[in-house]
Length: 127
Image 1 (cartoon, rainbow, N blue to C red):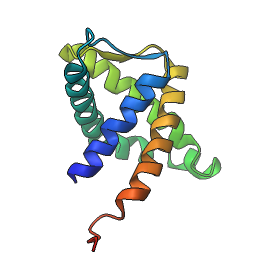
Image 2 (image 1 turned 45 degrees about the vertical axis):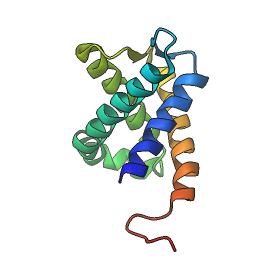
Image 3 (image 1 turned 90 degrees about the vertical axis):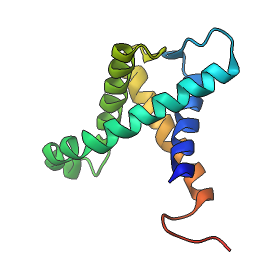
Image 4 (image 1 turned 45 degrees about the horizontal axis):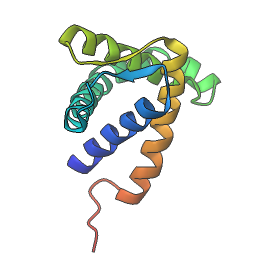
């Protein structure tokens, strides 16, 4: 569970680093940037756990018609919601607009998929 949380933080960090529309204001301190990304990952995890099931349920017909591609729009909306929560909590991380959130959601999904392929399945014991 901790490794998956760190994968999420790293995925968000990669998107923040590569996309100019997703920003982090850390004043040049690498430790501060890492701590901020861990906080953002925790907020993103809570938003995904609490809000995403509702979004998926409400948009399930659209998800079926688009063969699941609408999940990128849902993930972009959740990234925007995470940015809003971060602003309310004073966390120096944010997303400028929906298209930046869309590309960020795509990047977070790809990086998470790749990194999680190295971690293994949930509950699986590595020898």
